[in-house]
Length: 196
Image (cartoon, rainbow, N blue to C red):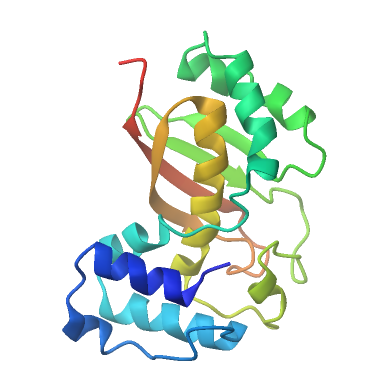
């Protein structure tokens, strides 16, 4: 889940001007409620550029523990001799090896970016978003950029599996943000490919 303290640290590291940061709603930094987190991100969405918001959310992401990423590391090591395209083609094998794994599709795009899609089932309305603060918001009402945090989590784990460094380029859609009408879709750019 997005962490306000970490987002502020990222803003300072990325040299977001203090005069912009000072315009953001400042809820409790520690133990912020889901509503306060959404309010803070709405402020970012209104005050900062889209590129700044994506760059900040790219550094977020929950569940970056070694325990969670171990399966992705192991799979990546087992396929270290494969190209990126070959690893993506083997994606169904990765999906089958992890019960509860939420990514439904990975594709390598013509422009060299990678698209990840989640939540393609037909459930609508009361779809259960895996983000804890969002689960507490009914109805779901938050800016799409909020889901960049989930995009950062997906990025982190899949860098091990795909053998490349990624950056969130765009949050295309969100199942929770669209009341179940659209899947969660993220586009990533490759920032480092050891094979090249």
